[in-house]
Image (cartoon, one colour):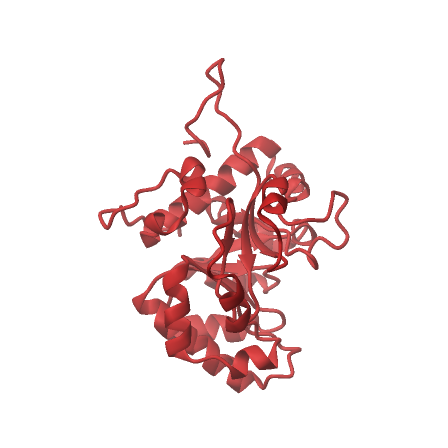
Length: 277
């Protein structure tokens, strides 16, 4: 199956727009500017307060996540499970959350917060973009103690052994341009791969325009690594997202603009798919 069943006039599959599953977007961006991105974008927030500022927006092709960034002391200190539970009623996306070894927040507090997030998500599944800088082992331990489906490890730089364990736990992986040359790429099943810019940090050295949704470099470089075409990679990324959304039964939580490309079940009867091992 390709990333979109729509076809061109000659019957060839129609190429969907780019998909960026991790970027930071100005909460004050205009709707016109969102359309000019020319892509579908997962927009991460860094705190519950930042999500509160965007939760009432109805942006085409832009999905806002509920974030509690581990590097933000104010965000971690303000976290409560009840407030987080209320926030995720507004979106199928959680991000950016996770652990960071360089944060001023004590690791014990970070882990307590992340496990509190995971406990809520065990009852209310969501797509979850997880930060793990310098703390990959702690993230894997948290997932062992509080298993959660729908995890997408953002900018993962774990060892081969930790990567294998993350795959075994069912995690997906989103790659910015800087990660495509990583040796761990070969250990990740292709149906677990997604593209991200991590704008404005992850695309800092990109050869392409630096903006959310500009994942052409990821598509090109990953195509070269996997001996596929950039078109194949874009379709693969959409297919992989479709599998996640279907497995988590989140189709009904996406706006109509996303349905045009995702084409996923939007009822409780959605099929539960098992990720590859």
